[in-house]
Length: 261
Image 1 (cartoon, rainbow, N blue to C red):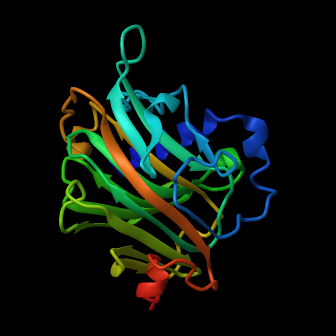
Image 2: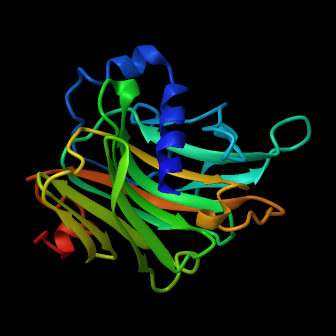
Image 3: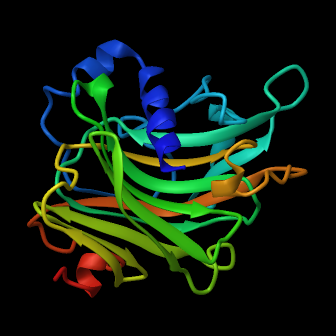
């Protein structure tokens, strides 16, 4: 089912304003940052709003599903209400592209079959570049696991699914990946759990995404859809990017705990 990831990501980006995305190829990669998400900085983040990524997605991206509560970003999957889409879902994406370095976030989810909570980077044809992508996904049907993979030229590779203890619905966990030429390493709570090396890895600067969405058709991947009776939330306490070669910038960073091999 990984080919669906390519379809829905490209569809999402195509829905954005073309004057902005056409400039993406020309601009330099964004600088390092740490964002505690006490409020959503609109100069850094774009909120996906008003479209879906295809028939496989059963919800509409909505700014109504994005909020902050007690210093934590809330990305909700929720009923749409009378007269509108049946379900609303949430996504934020960086306005900048980022090059090699370390991407990390502290995340907690609520369990439920048929939903996907993700931290990932992406660029593609709408940016006048090949499709490159690096993923961390929590399929909330199984919050005791996290899935990792890459895309290059739209083709998935380097996939792995590994345990998360305690499950991601019971506690916040720190998820991270470091990308450098010829190597990518994925971390959970400062521990290197998966890596890929050699040729054929994503190399293009990419946007950073946090998303929470659902499906009623991708059941063999995401599980049968379990309709919630109210909002179900992906919580993000903080998110950060540290450019390759720069030192650890904040205490919780994986760069302070587990130097890359």
